[in-house]
Image (cartoon, rainbow, N blue to C red):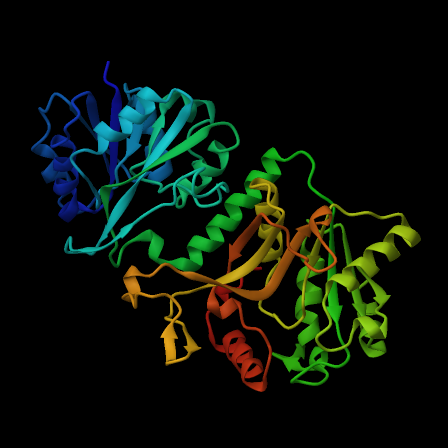
Length: 458
């Protein structure tokens, strides 16, 4: 019996495959086998694999194209190792990868999965940077950032107990597995870069739009299949009569309808909201919302709707009103401000799913920002961070975009809507437009009319 099964699913990556296979052959750890699946390649993959036909530690399978997750399950069923690792055909391992990771699982029987840091390389193999993952438990308690889908070593027994890979998913299979894994087993990571992750024009992960949409679907499917009782969520749509700098913001026209309609329509589409309440001091808004029978209206006291007034008193007012008038007490409250019109029901639902899956106090929507920021100091502008790093060296900052806020009711305080354990859902920049000016109104209109509307899934 071998300890570790490494498997490679290869589909038209012949120009990288040899380096990937040779990185396994060079391992300082001896107890391994390698399974290579030629998944319907039409390039020179078959010719490369012929060199290894007689290698006693390598099994080669040629098949019609079945996709990544189906091939993952085929490799799992064929494997003899106690531990499994997928190696993508365009990536390669450090010579110590199997030695380090297998030793962790050998010496830590309570650990079911272990993953390392890694180098990011370009198409030509030049190192771009080192991706360092925060140390679990000592640096991070929340498990909402998954292990990399490849070059993560997992106990075969854990994978089998989870039912293997979901073959309905053809990308982000590692994210799906991670969500299911952390519900039952314990992960671990080592802060040593042990593989080389290639980013090039064909990389699946470069399509951020589809990546985020897929992760939303994975979360939704997991919650539907595994969570027996979802929290009762109250959505509050707060609207002020006096809005700055654009007066009468709710009734500004955008792509042929009122700005307010975008939020009302998406809230009504969502199946995860228990009640939806619009609260406003504006009689015109309260009258208009009657065309949406799913949405209740509660008049907002004028003193709670003044400019620069905190939202927490309004939340308390609505909760008390519903408790007294309808005996309704939700588990969580979501705020949906009308000034972010490109938010969709999928963003609403994934915020709640994220709160449930990772047991967060609160979840907000954010947009990634990797620009360099400055602040004014005694000597003029200084970088927000001491080292002025190149773009590829910088960690992303997360900018609150105002689209979705959700908190458990017992975590909302009089001076803070958000709890301590804060999760996030990432939205694209073009989905995160916040209407603060005529320019943003024009920008949102341009996106809706001229961009590929696939971005804004129904």
